[in-house]
Length: 518
Ligand code: ME8
Image (cartoon, rainbow, N blue to C red; front, side, top):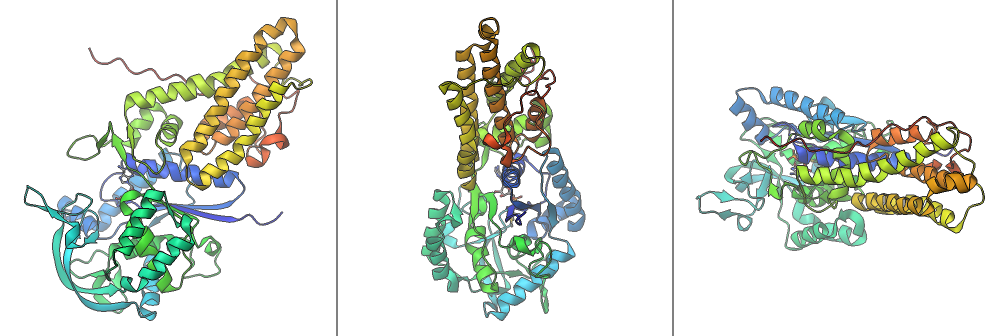
């Protein structure tokens, strides 16, 4: 058996200055779906998530709570890990930037950039947003009527003046533009790519990469008065976890460079400008793709603690069910664009696509088999053109899904699957197997066979998105445990006539909104 191709995918690592919110859950669910898709498609996947624990924001939040930053990080990092379990995330590792392996990797990357002549000491004076952990040019900021100066992401900035190490980012402008041109898939979606290119074209200034006015960070090699700028530290996590820097031929070194960094649109500049420049400087291979998803808006409004509309993913999952929530976000939101959600929208989507769609199709067709075919998968007789067309549509789903998932168009992959559900509904209704029961039971068996075979393929392809429910569907069609990956799609894995089936249990119940309080 040939070695599987490595595939390395990451989420951003979250700041554990608070509990995880629905935006964090969204990114993890989407990245998990991509990781699962590649695994089922035969790749050797390494999927990483974790927490970004240093920096001024962490130190300030800890101080406000009267605890040490390490204690704040430990407490909330555990919450992020727990959220991963709750969401059925299949990450292979969970990195914390406070771990020794990460300190070591950061020192190594720093030393390599320094050895390449890209780091020098000077003094920094400019605007800094602690909330974004970002430096901004004065012309990117504005003073609002409240008298406070804000950065481009709408967070307050403060004046910072201190001795600092700088990274010669300006020296990388041309190499970055060449990268975007030669590797057009490096940044997705197109809006973000354009935004990054125009930012880089407008001129890059050298970047301050150390701080001296607080100490919650990784010390700069040979100059312990400085801690590394949190983004140098944070971005390096992606390499740390592969052991590529410290243990060149270790078991995970094969995963670097990453195939995809999945992040939110607010941090595209760090990933598509600073990160490749750091890597070029350190002489390390560049990731293949950075894809920025949009922001989730609660009923169209930005979530914020002051608006009191920050949704706890735990509550959402308890209320609607895990696979229902996963499905909703992946199908409803165009991946790469902002998306709005509300309880009504979630309920409507669950009922239309899951309960009335795939759930109903599976239970109607499989219960007919159990009742009318001795509880066994029927033997198909000669296939009609309609049967062949139906099976061809099912067999074609994998290729469509692959193309869409390669571009992170998760919603389109799901749309393609649901289109086949609808087509199968029409096929089933048109063939009227219930009427054939008396007139032509052999033909009934063929129609039920074809329908159950399509259900099998839909279930295999739904596994990345709704893993538990898809497994239940696969149990209903008695798919063997070792025939559930994508190699079992199409002709290769057709249902075997005579296989006994159990009476189907409902997989996707209808969602009924709780009565509003009178
Ligand atoms: O940015 N909708 O951490 P973070 C969708 N530590 N995505 C959202 C969101 C929302 N409402 N709010 C946040 C950081 N996100 C850094 C990353 S990576 C080397 C370091 C996304 O906790 C956000 O875009 O602020 C980011 O991708 C992730 O959640 C973590 O955000």
